[in-house]
Image 1 (tube, rainbow, N blue to C red):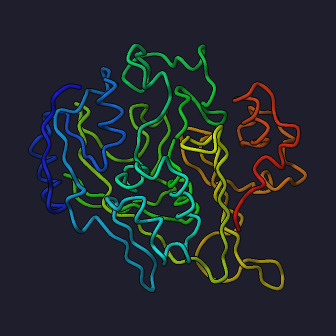
Image 2 (cartoon, rainbow, N blue to C red):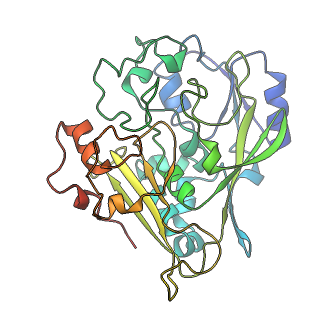
Length: 341
């Protein structure tokens, strides 16, 4: 591993000042470090558009970014809060179980003990070409996507234009279903971005997966400080499922998060808060997106009835099976019917 400088920030302002101070170098923000240190830097994942970090700013030392606060308006979680703390929080388990279930499905207990919510949301893709030292792909500043002609199992089946990575975060899937927003701080000031707008595709900028800005030399100029989640409508329940090859430490083949609002007398959702018929699918495309076709995963009349390359994402489960195993499951409508409500 190449040597680097590490600085502990005590406040958000201090972290921002450090980003500005080292803006001429490849500077990155680090939480638990399981991805950027234990993955990217250890494995020498680099390229013309992705230099190895020279300076790391530790934000787990910022007290304001650690912890969970719940009030009448909703819930705020510091980006440096560990996944274990998210899982163990009783208020979250009661009110937002889709998030705690998603966090519980991440990696192993050891990694969840030091891995942070912000780190899980903002981790880099797990594409083996991107992670491979010898592949100068688009996402590292190269001029080719090796998944197009190479082994493209576990890659995008929806919306994979130019680059065919899939986003690896489980908690991001749940947070998008919860209508969450991200608070961002950086050298250009502070801003709040809805999770609907937070993740970006390769046509926007192939070198990144979200709206966090970088300098021209690839260094970070912004970082996520908090995640805010509005209170759900009264009576809302949530479903979460994660399909994977092994029922142990593994990334998803596909994951699904969905709110189920309480229905009124005429079958309409009651109360204010989360949208009804909103379904979020993880590990299917480069971006995070909410679907307006929830019947596709309910075994409804349209489930599995479209081609795998349907741009609307129909026939999702059958396409997952085809992309991963070479053929769809016999009963695709049941493949993801293990949601917890």
